[in-house]
Structures are given as structure tokens and as C-alpha cells.
Image (cartoon, rainbow, N blue to C red; front, side, top):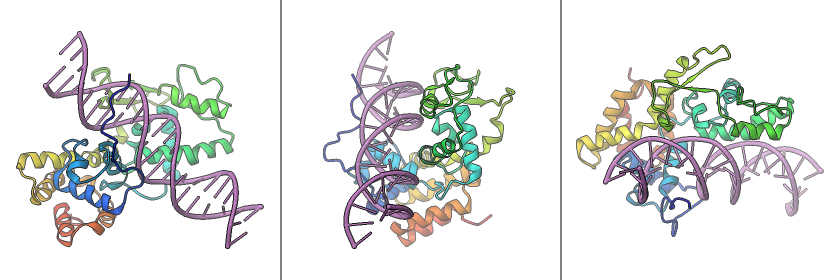
Length: 262
DNA sequence: AAGCGAGCCAACCGCCCATAG
DNA sequence: ACTATGGGCGGTTGGCTCGCT
């Protein structure tokens, strides 16, 4: 007995997103925020599943998505993190501002895996209930990577089984807390993914859904998270969305974010 | 130039978890 | 306590691009 599907799939569009759909989704989120992903496609005039919209926004349209090749440094860090966390791509992605879990996952599956294989390096998470004894077998080690539990120590102050809201303490081999250095990055990542909810808060508090929402929401967003949006991030994002925003909307956004005005 | 295969990446699927009612 | 619902996550797939033959 599985769950019911998240939406009626009949009549829904699938596959690659068109520019027009991107435009609709971006405009809708900028103007209205996200109350409920299930309702977003309908209200935005999209024939898409809510999940599909969410994915598109998170992986492609949101402001702080960092595009471009993953650097050697990032790759090394991914390998290190993967050895500790296993296939917890969302957790790994928290350490890379602007990178999505999907991107990191793809990079791992396509490049790093191959690289490690070529180098004859079997790679698997450490300290995984000693399941990974056959680390010389590439396939098995890959499977181990997904099966083994990562070296995460649940923060004793958090409620057990709290899922994605858990906080984790990463430890190195010496048992030292490794998480402190990444707190800033975590904030940056969260600021991006929470942008829509901030917009929502502003929308709720202002009680309107007019064009001015973008402005008021942006003010809140700016106050809360301004330091986390670099000029470069914003510039890149503007470049991607301005194709389907009006001149006024572009200007409005720039005003809202106060780009380059420190 | 055409065919083919590998690589890459966006998107989908199904499951799990948190939470509201 | 139980159920329904929505969000999030990891695994997988499909299609496009590019290089090689």
C-alpha cells in the first residue's frame, strides 16, 4: 500500500521545462511566495506537478544557485564528506553554497566515481557498522555507500527522529566536532532555500498579493539574509530571470536587494 | 556524413518523515 | 493514537551533446 500520488497526473506536462514555464513559476514565486507546492502549479497557471515545480525552483530557478563546473577543491571536499556522510547528498550539499544536492549527486555518479575507479581507489563511508569489508570491489563499495549509515552523531539536544530538522555534529577521526566551520555556509544555503518562505511570511503579514508584495517581501528577505546573497550570485540569477521579467520588475528587484550597495 | 556509444544533467519516481487535524 | 497530507530525499531514468569510428 503506497501513498496516494502527490497530484493527479492526468493532463500534466512532463519533461523539460520551457522558458515560458520558468517565467511563470519565477514570477509567481516572486510575487506570491510559496504557500503550498501542491497549489503552486494551479495558481501559477502551470500544468505541472507541485513536486516538479519545487524541484525546478530549488535546482534551477532560485536566486543563489551556483552554476558552472565543480572545482577540484570542491571535489576533494565532496569525497571527504561522502566518506563520512555516505549518500546523504542534501547534507553534503549544505557545505557547498549554491550547489544543489542533485548537482553534487550527479557529479559524484558521473565523475568522482569514475575517477576513483580509475585511480583504483575504493571509496566508502568510514565506520559503517563494518559492513564495508569488501572495499576493493567497486560495485559493492558503491552499494555500501548507499546502504551504510554515515558517521553522524545526533545532537543530544535534538529530538530523535526529527528527520530533516535534525542537527548533526560531524566528527573527524579524532572525534572532534567538524561542523563549526561550515555553519556560515549552512546559513547561506538555508538563506537561499528559505527565501521563498521569507517571501511568504512577508506576504502573509502584508496581507496582499499584489505586485507590491515583491517589494515588501524583498525588504524582509534583505533584512534577514542580505549578507548571504553575494553580488555575484544575484547578478547570475538576475541574468537568468530578467529574460522573462519586465523592465520595472527587474529594477524593482535590484532596488529590493540593493545590489552592490554596501 | 552517418552511426554509435559514453558522458552529462535535468527531471521523475517512490519512499520516508514530520505534522496537522 | 491514528490518519491524511505535504515536503524532502535518494535512486533512477531519459534525452541531449559530443567525440570517436
